[in-house]
Image 1: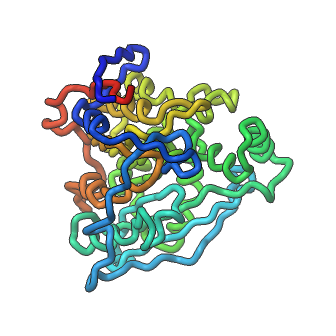
Image 2: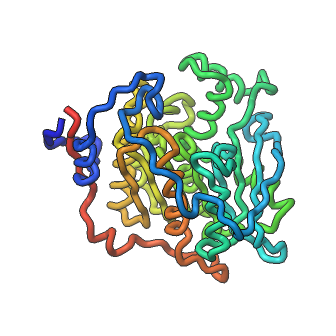
Length: 366
């Protein structure tokens, strides 16, 4: 351990910051059992996540927004799937003024103020400080297809679950989140956000809309913005699953998540601002691929095509801990320069980033 070798990955066209990787070599070996491994058996040994501090915590005197009870809708796009969601409304919301919007995948996990990624605290603090605009946040969970048997969606999800030994609930989540098509983006545009707009005055311009998620929710968020860049222009992905989870499962969908770096390089430029977070101890999965290398490939593709992006890459595993700890920083960066009088902005790569080289890689653990 600690001996660095060059690694040529021409087929992957990826690289990682040497300084980030060298920090791994300085850590003592850790060998927890698979059952105890943070991030699951396919994650590597990793240090404890950073503590939650600053704007991740509730502070006296900061007005707290309100979170709705659990709400539900039945999707026609997903053949009767029932989807639960919650709506956060900041204390500063004025119904006479349309508010910015942010959609959180796997939303229930973000909505616990005492959890490891307490988005409500960050929203309260940053909105009160004027560091981000007044945002209506929509926390949506993966759906439930169990009450809609004999539909095409149910049959697909059921077959997928049996093929890969996954539950029906987990399989509908993957069908929504990991599929590289516009279906989930249409669900948000045609079904979920109109329900929220029945209650609150929402901005409809992509400049004022953001989307985020972790793991499969991370690729889901990027995919929704990529497929409908007129709906979302700001993206945060934690430990994103840019891997082959739904590759060739649906014969009408040719691409898998692992294809996104090449899609970024070869397809038309989208007007997006993107923060990616991952760690060197994320999953090396024998079924679906490598999460760390996939995210490095994504970062390099965004860089090479001039996107406005940030890449936070440390030593973390497949958990929300690091993303949760840096969420306030991510939000300030994502919404920087926001002007409610505008409806559009052409995002460009920061000159300091443009002057830096692509990310390079080295092997340090063997």
